[in-house]
Figure 1 (cartoon, rainbow, N blue to C red):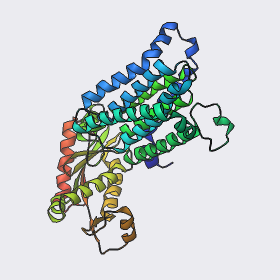
Figure 2: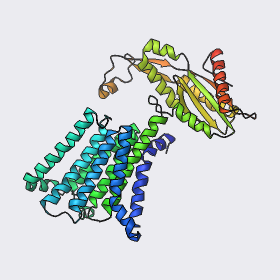
Figure 3: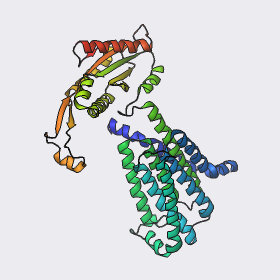
Figure 4: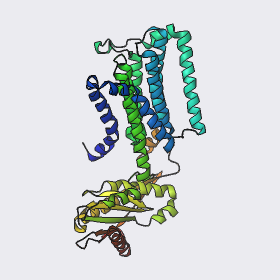
Length: 410
C-alpha cells in the first residue's frame, strides 16, 4: 500500500475503531453492574446531545441534523419498538426510519455546510418534518400496498432470512453507504467520514434491532462517531490551510514547541509568484499554490510540510542536520522545476466528459513551469532558539533568491 493510499485511509480510522469497540463492548454487557446497564440506556442521548452542543458551537448544521436523527430514531425504538415489530404501526415506524435514515445521511453528505439556524438550516428542518408527515400518511393509508414492495425477496439467501431489515431496504442502505464512502474518500473530510460511520452503526442497529443490547450500543457509537467528526473538522479548520489542505502556520507553531534539540528548518518560496497572479490571475495563482503544496507534502526524508503564509512554505526535518536535509530538498526543488503545470483555457468545457474528450489537445491550454527557492538552517551545537533558527532559514532563503533563485542555500 502506497503512502498516499495510507494517508487517504486515515480518515476512516476513527469510525472503524469506534465500530470495532462497539462490537467488543457487546460481549461485556452481560457482566456489567446494573447501574452501568441503566447508564447504557441513556448513552445514545448523551452522545447525541453532546455532539449537538458542539455543532451549535462550531456552526455545523449537517452533523447537528444527523445527531438529531440518531436521537429521534433511538427514542422511537425505546417508545414503540423495544418489545418487537408487530402490527402495521410498528412496521410503519421501523420501515420509515429504515428508508429515511440512509436517505437523509446521504443527502447531508452530498450537500455543503449551510449552518444550523440559517435559512438553509431552517429549510432542512422543515424538509425533515415533511418527510415525517409523508411517511406517516403513506403507512397510515397505504400500508397494505407499500409493505409487499418493501419486503420483496430478490435473492434467496439463508443468511438474510433472520434479519428484520428486508432486502430492498438493505440494498438501498448499502448503495447509499457506498455513495457516502466515495464522497468521504474523495473529499478527505471528517464530516463525511462521520456520516459514513454513523450510518453504518444505524444500519447495524436496524438489521439487528431485535437484540436488546444492539440499539443502545450502536446508537451510542453513531453519536460518538459523528461527534468526533465535528472535533476533527474543527481541528482541521484551525490547523490546516483552507486553500492547499496542508498544515497551517498555527500547526507549525504548535509542532515547534516540542521539536527537540536536533532539527533543520527549510523556508521555501515560489519564485516570481506575483508575476503569475499579474499575468494569469488569482485563480492560476491558487492553482500554482496547490500544486507546489502537493509536491512539498510528499518531500522525502521525513520532512513535515506547512504553509507559512502567502507563497511561502516551511519544511521541518526533526532529528536531521542541514547537510542531511539538503539532498531531500534538492530533489524536491528539481521535481517542482521539471513539472509542467497545465493552465486550462477559457474555452475548455466545464463538463467533465467533454473535458476528457479534449484532453491531450494543446489548443485549449497553456503549460507553465514553476520554480522555488529554498533556505535551510539547523539548531546546531550552539542550540539556537526556534526563533533564531527560523530567522537563519529565512536569511538563507533570501540568499538563494539573490543568487538567481531556483536553488537551495544554507
